[in-house]
Amino acid sequence: METADHSAREAPSALTIRWARFAPTRRNLWLVFGVWAAISIATSAVMYAAALTGASGIMIGGDFSAFFIAANAAAEGAAANIYTVADFQARLNAAFPGRDDLTLSWQYPPTYFLMVAAFAGLPYLLGFSIFSAATAGAYAALIRKEIKGNLLFFAVIASPAAFIALTSGQNGFLTAALLLLAASDPKRRPIIAGVAAGLLTVKPHLGLLIPIAYLAAGCWRAIAVAALTAAGLAALSLIAYGAEPWLAFFASITEVNDRVSTGLMPLAKMATPYSAALYAGLPEWPARAFHLICGIGAAAAVWRVWRRVDDAGLRAAALIAGVFLIAPYGFYYELIILGLPVAVVVMRALETGWLKYEQWMLAGLWLLSLSTPMFADTRAGISTGFVIVLLVFVLTMRRALARG
Image (cartoon, rainbow, N blue to C red; front, side, top):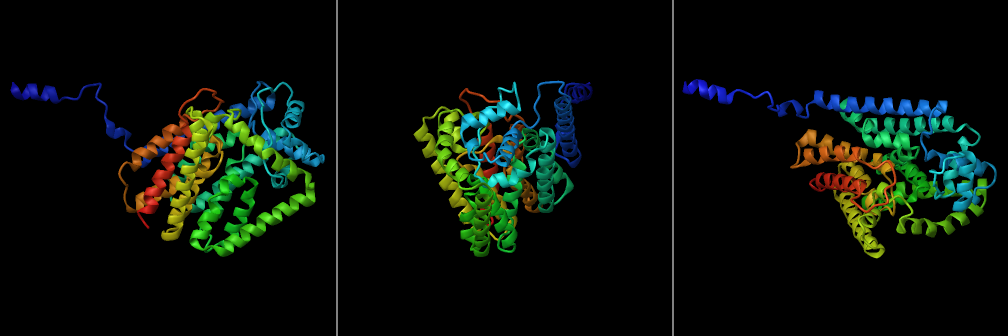
């Protein structure tokens, strides 16, 4: 009787959760990433079809409208005019009547006109399709060379960050590709790395750690190539558009900073220390101090890694992981930049074993990336993007500093 009672007590309940079924096996990971990819593709297809047929007010790749306006303004000889918010907004309203939600401004240096010039005169959706296919394809091709294993590659290109980068119409894939090339072993590939670093001056705030890394590792040829590329790009823009756009650009820099500090920019969508501090409710100067501390810390960590660590993959990961900690501003659609650091951490873990809490932190990254805000939020709160940036930086630096 005692044996029967004991057996009854040990019998599994119908409500018992078999946690082993949810272990991160290859099969389960393929299933998770596959389901998310299917959802992303289906959502994108429906939104694109609705926009193409005019069946709804949905605008695919809304931020691409800024590039679309800039390309056409530059072709008309009005490149300098669009640095004025009122002029740029008027052009948006004329090109997309009834779209009062497009409250964008033009903040790029004149060199970026060279990169969007080909879209002048094209229909909006065609231009967006070409831009997205070219930049996403370039990023996928480049990161595929850096990642070992189909599952890990699929996890990166099927991530929520990739979905946001694709549907937002922004240039996250472009900057991610340039950063990847600039960070990938400039000692052995100084021309490729230097050209990529020079081209990244179209978004200079994302490349602030590159000279620190190059100097730490003594990548003198890459530094020279980067300087020549940047100078050549600037010279081409002067020849093509004149000096007026440059004067307008420098005059607008203060205005951009004011838009961030006063909350006119969507702080909830940003991922830097400064924006996170402002979003949490801190006054401007404490927020600036917090950003300065984070930036100095990131620069020091990158310097040490590039000075002492021989692993080219970890050096590239450390540089890219620190980008948002020093950049004055950066948005959620650029988080795809962090795909390489995460992939490198996973690859080194599979080679040498997992560090404590690594798997939990990676799982947290995935869940947090699903909650990235898609719409502006004027309330104070915790910046999801900044938490993601911190997690990736800690994961990467734990790996890198353990090697040097």
